[in-house]
Image (cartoon, rainbow over all chains, first blue to last red; front, side, top):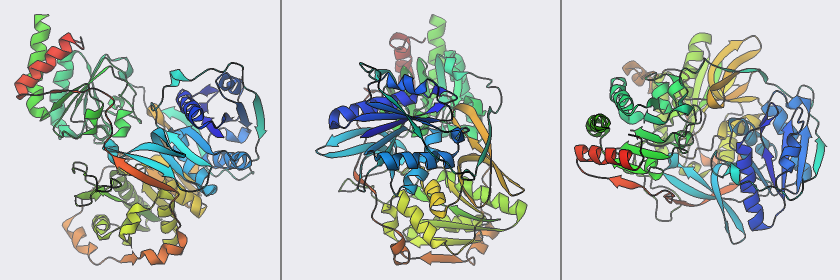
Length: 328
Length: 256
């Protein structure tokens, strides 16, 4: 059996859950293994029914007030009980910050392993292999399980199409599952979730984004990227290392820990294209990458590739953009 | 506070990587550096020690070359180092690496263990969390701030999309540290000199062999990703490239 554990927060399904369900449906179709789903939380309301509308054999509603607020102790303890009883062959989850916080603990508690942040799968004969990026996306690896099931896999945000999830002909049955979590078994005491400061810039609304990465070398060089953004009428953004260095404020960061954007044009200057950055911008309609390293992973997803020194290319580019704009 | 920092040596960011002949791993004749989040983990440990006293111990596993990250850490102020030295450690999965570390430190009493949030080579983001479970300790991941308080610590976890959360937790605990939690220091000349006299314990594969087992997952094949997108490469002098690109932006992308 394949089990997809969907993620919910405050009564809403995290939409990457649909991506994982799409992956589960595809693997089920290829292997012939039945597909089931589980929803976990303090109080699930109509969530299980929402998942049961999709093409799955069954949905488990695993409810316990101790799941709220989220702690790795409660999730690992509750899911270990459930999975030990059900013994699924394959357990699929989205690679969210929450899942990566508890799933290695859960798998270890069961003496199992996780293939984390996978981007796809292949069935080779009887064997399932999962593909995942290595060396910051420069290579891809086919990884197989060599131990006993349950096999845990987490899928990267965007690896599958959430909008392609198949609806079921009839609603799947929902089974309530009770798990016990011992008093005193939860050691962490989480406080309220908060946002640091009001985001001054909403990059998600920008049609054109000029983003800078490590290749910009020095803080003072940010200026030419700013000039290019201004010439194009776009917003300036950056990869994480630039914001970590304080060269641009955190609210201009694109990537898994920053904003996720899908502009008409994403112009990447000196960005190598680490996975954490790519997940935040691969939805852009057109990606232009300027980078001196011809093997930079950013070129894998670029529509237009300029292999060259950005300090030589950007100044004439600013001039040409200005000329074109002036010419109307 | 007695803090252990788990560090890893990874290929340098700009190093050109080549596959080995079997297509199962990279050729290892290249330049290496410390995994970036691990450098922040070390810096945080040093700052905690400066505030609260105690000891900072660094640990790594890998062949002789991996000792460089330990020497750098000692030069920056770590008190002693542990090197699980064998080429075989490179091929261990996260579960086995954590088991080897747990066995190595079983007689030590750390208050905190730090790891970087993930490595730049495998990118599993698992070793720290697995280590916590093996030790029976609580953990928290992607940490941006650590404050000592009565009976434990308060940490700031980074969540997705600009959200954060404070978590109170008891000690001992394992924390995975996010890049950017602090500003990195450089090693001083005097630090580099002092590092030579600091204790470095070497651990052989044989010493931890009974604690580890077969890997539970295996890299069957490593390869260059297949392109899913058609990329048009723009060539010429910088001015020619700028002209061609603007033409595309105007006529095809239609943003000018």
